[in-house]
Image 1 (cartoon, helix red, strand yellow):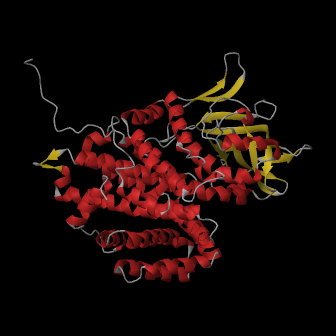
Image 2: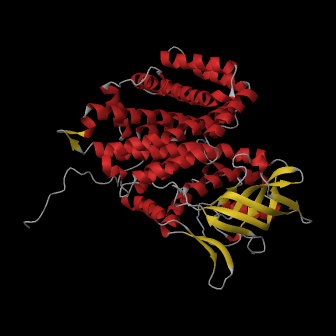
Image 3: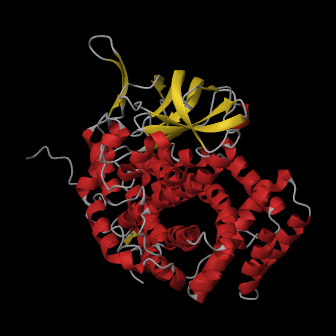
Amino acid sequence: MSWQTHTVFNQPGPLNNSNLFLSDGALREALVREGAGWDSDLLASIGQQLGTAESLELGRLANTNPPELLRYDATGTRLDDVRFHPAWHLLMQGLCANRVHNLPWEEDARAGSFVARAARFMLHAQVEAGTLCPITMTFAATPLLQQALPAEFKEWITPLMSDRYDPHLLPGAQKRGLLIGMGMTEKQGGSDVLSNTTRAERLADGSYRLVGHKWFFSVPQSDAHLVLAQATGGLSCFFMPRLLPDGQRNAIRIERLKDKLGNRSNASSEVEFQEAFGWLVGEESEGVRQILRMGGLTRFDCALGSHSMMRRALSVALYHAFQRQAFGKNLVDLPLMRQVLGRMALQLEGQTTFLFRLAGAWGRQSHEAERLWARLFTPAAKFAICKAGMPFVAEAMEVLGGSGYCEENELPRLYREMPVNSIWEGSGNIMCLDVLRVLTKQPDALELLAEMCGDVKGQDRHYDRQWRQLQQRLRKPSEAQGREIAMQIYLLGTGAQMLKYASPPMAQAWCRMMLDTRGSVLLNDQVISDVLLRATGGV
């Protein structure tokens, strides 16, 4: 045809049909090191399935077809239901089948199951993040409900611990699988939950009647929510089922679904309680304590989720750079691009090593030192890693250039998704205040830091300098320095793991890159080659 204008070439296709587990050398090593190597074969199978074009398309469809609020039916009967695209339900089926919502809480759970569950979470997060919201809330609520579920709902334990996803509107005891949501924040308070105004009045049968509102009521289609309300004794935690034991709808009125920047596949709502029924969890006035029992788990998932999306962004960028040619070479062979990609991969290498050490600590809560490790480093990790996600994905977009900025690519969705993890479950300042709270209220935390840093003392001068600087700050820790302190704690925790387990050249390079205060440091080409090899599946 004489009018043909050009031939399309030098345009890499989308990254699909890859194995998300086998292509990640750092993840595979961390899994074994933290005691969950027994899950490697299943993770390889999950990684293969999730990396297919079909799975990735489900993630796209779930976000381009967001949930819809069905407030009334055709007869005018109040429904307060949410309708999802079929892609959402298929993604949820996979998450539940892989027990991302309850693996460590099984009665016969294997040692290392918390670590295995973190790896499964990480793989799913690279495909679609919105579906992880109901999963992480159910995951965090389950151990609390196993101990404190109101007597009227004891039959819920069996479906709560199943591997089934059941979206049907039925009483919980009749379902094959359950999801639990949370409702904490109100218009006037946000993170300051003590200012909540929702009231709870005790009734003669022991239940409570709640009147008030929630500004963010996550996943309103959940079978039940844990909510905070003011009872006679103070702020308390209540179990609020969507359907009452007699099958009637609870008086939870969905006012609207949030129109969010990202997280489009997931339904977040505003609700009012018009004399809704709830059952006390624990004792009156223990609301904050009960929520904090879950908060650490959801915060860990926030950090893990941001890391996972960063990992996907790097994979997309690397796939492009290995194929795209510019100035006579593949992008990955250009010196400046090699520095960019090497630094990105090395940053994730450290995050993977650290997060799976943290997952191991969460799985060893019977040991006081491990419990303290998780308590201190979880808010630090959420602050540092979630903050790092947005510029990281933006850098990945630059690798692709203009095509990375267009909606046909998955990077714009990842970019929009990133801020939610910095905000949800406590924004950056809240995380830093939590770190300071641990340091001031638990003196053993300082000993834990000293022991951790002492184990690697003398291996890297940048690391040793950071530890000395933190010690000076901790002599008189001030709230105004909370961000610097939290960031240093995260960096020292990550650096300790790198110095212990990474190759010496890679560990030294990480310390120079992340801890040298003099500015940007060039990575040598051998380190870049090694870290890119690991980021694409070599060990």
